[in-house]
Image (tube, rainbow, N blue to C red; front, side):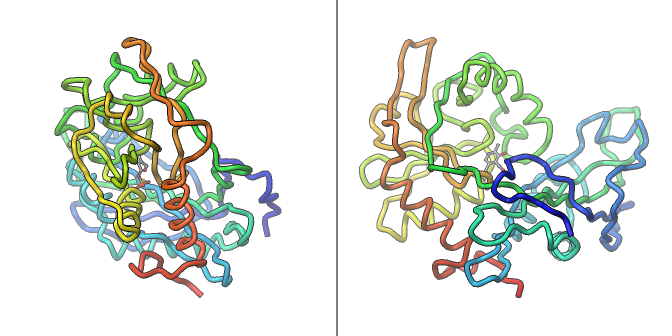
Length: 336
Ligand SMILES: Cc1ncc(COP(=O)(O)O)c(C=O)c1O
């Protein structure tokens, strides 16, 4: 039994007891298995190393108020990973295998599932890598699917707080119709120059569309959402990752009578929004207090406290995840 101080657990990697692995050769997947070995015996010319043929996911399991374990919308992660795999010419992981591997990772690391009330959760990082040795440019035929579990602390250990974003027009995250819509490592490596430059100034990076630098694409590694009157606004773009959190929040926003619109959003429209936020699995909602656009000498402000609409949506989704509210859409797989 691991001794973990849940109250000080941060938002970083804690070594699990077991990871789960499954191999695929020439289109045929083998059964997943749990192993304590965290190292791979990988050929130096593997396509994941040479050409970035890899994709990953992120999802969470929650210990609910009733003591039951809930895994949130893992089938959506499985589907998105299958799209990422197809986008990078990899053999998709079948949904059933994906689910089995998550269950195995959970069952073999039950003592890493944080107790209810700590705000902490068990995060799963599914990873798909190309393992065929190849020096000639091209895709491989062999893959490894890995699930790495890690308990993570609450994103907001104290108060639900705001972050500030800064616009960067000099580094693009992903091209229209490129790989931005897939969850692949290359997108993140490509964004590091911009995100680290923003961090050095104490901010997070707001990415605009790469073609016109006019429309909002993504907030670092999260989708953008804004509130304008009774409207929930979020960007439509072929360069952004379809966020499962955003999809869930859109459903909840509709349920509470909001108009939900997905369209190109010009940066200047921020001036007409009452609330703005980044959303994703890690934070659910991370409210934005300001967006700085130093090149245009403009600052968009949303106040220093999270707004009422996004605060309500944040709690509505967290309540479903922790079993405090009815799960009408069957988003959680419950494990007794
Ligand atoms: C680039 C990017 N956009 C958006 C998201 C949010 O997606 P989700 O809500 O599925 O975590 C993530 C995180 O996975 C991300 O990496």
